[in-house]
Length: 217
Image 1: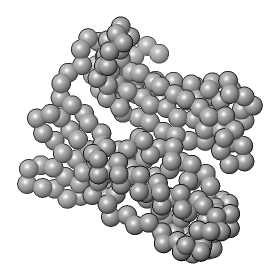
Image 2: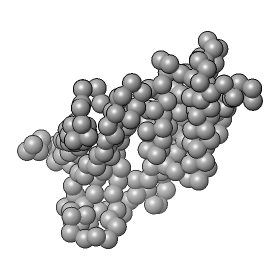
Image 3: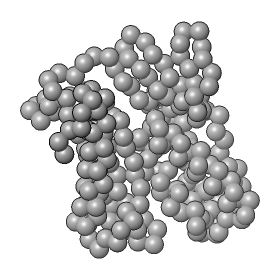
């Protein structure tokens, strides 16, 4: 961990900046150091060819490097990184080219300032935990299904007005639905259950931090 004179610091590839507005966490310094995997033009023309052992090693390395910011500071990468990880077992040249594209996208997001912001301004009214989820049925390799969720801390105002309300994103993921689902409804139900469980965990932790007591679940 490195620390600057003004109190900002870097830890595990994350830069944490605290100022009068709040706390900002980004990974631009980490992202800009990542390099794409070289793929020759002739190799790109064989998009359906399996990766060589060397290419597979490079694909695995880049996929792991992209998964880190997807899990920690850039939710917009969550599905893209998860999708790459799902293709490792039977990766093709097209998947390696796509991994390079995802890296380019990640660096564009990092350069544009995508990050986590925890602002000082207090939330209005009573705070609440909000979970949002979605699912994709049988659209992944081998007919697999995908689920994604966001868990946010916000105020009850979000239930009362159509206007934008400040929220603080604290948990998210996009991953494979491990149970067998046979319909879009089943995929959505599985995603809902997972999002509810994560939101409940955040609610319990928040209650213990603020009150020292377990909430009624």
